[in-house]
Image 1 (tube, rainbow over the protein chains, first blue to last red):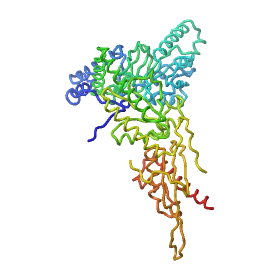
Image 2: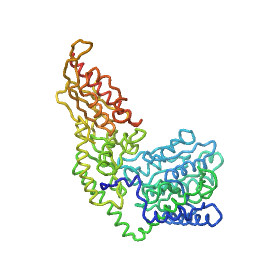
Image 3: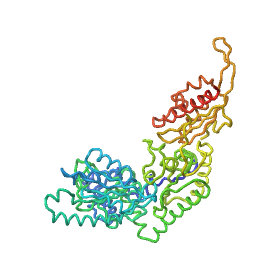
Length: 428
Length: 124
């Protein structure tokens, strides 16, 4: 079988060896339900507790502040819907500030609440760099804002958002609100919410950037297990003590009555071990930095090779503020899905923001929000590297990519290849 | 991926070009028309037929495939028959298309018809 090259690490990564090994005993050995009081249950409960401790060390928080979920999407839903349900009061519609580049799990959830008339929302646009400005986010906060949700690393471009800056400003606003709450008269109090929470979806950041709760100054942090070497189907929401939250999944009272459902022991154990394996690398900071550097260097090699060998390409997103492993290109005069298919035939796996590849036929909302034209999103391809990626794989990929793009351009309708290519008009 | 009839006919007799507003794909087909004897109800008449056809596509895999297969379906057909081609036939020739890609077959059908219309307009 021909060797395959995986360059879609942002979509998912292989389960780390340590995590897979740690999961095995829980398939049929220690298979109990953690809520059972007998020894089978206690074994499973102990495993969950251990995983919870590992994740709390990863985020530098208390174990009781971790709620295990079925993944990043559920964590995002819980954060947003949970805060709105807990904080909303009749007579004052709450407001959420988020960005136009969030993952669908955040944007669609906020839009859903907006459509139902439960909230107002603001969607902050990014700069062409791919990052939102902290001041744009902060200036959108109103008296009735109860939640600000900004992702840490954008999944399509890899651009890092100014989370600490935003977190710091939100803390200041919170203090002011507490002051107003104490001194305000009833009429005044009716016009604002004293609660203001900061949520960040750190699914793409974990593994490359520190996600410590106090460093980010966030009240809610979403993590996805399969993005950091754990199994799919697990994740968590960090909830700072004192945050008002109502469960979205009700039932048997698991996860401190905040997320019902028999715990996915096997996957939670895998998640815990995946973060421990990552944390372990961090204990040698120099070692971890070296590994991150090597991924970054390979990405730079990919960019250099691509820009050199192929005309009319642009990088989407400022590489100076991007995570080491993700790069998003737009290729003029060709379409992303066809590039993806041709690379796939050569054994190379990547992803695209082209409308053609999305089930909804909508082009990437992130790229559009950054100011790209529809044709530019049409020709977009995302490469995301991993710690296993090699120099040889990058060299081979650049060679194949150049051939594929040339072939597709020969086949293409649009002749003038420039970033500002006008859509060819239909003949009448 | 080895699509048939990829390219552009120079000095084509008919040109069809269209874009799909749904997803942004673009298709171009160029045809060469010739005449041959046709036998319809014992009357010996001349009919125009698609002597050669080439396609170009800026689009996803389905867009490339539908354009290509459309050219193989209509090559050699009389103009009258070629105009009758439906997107369902195009999709069927590919072994079916997922619902979300059916619009590509519509585009291919549209471009074929436009190329033939263009020829007929020029002829007048």
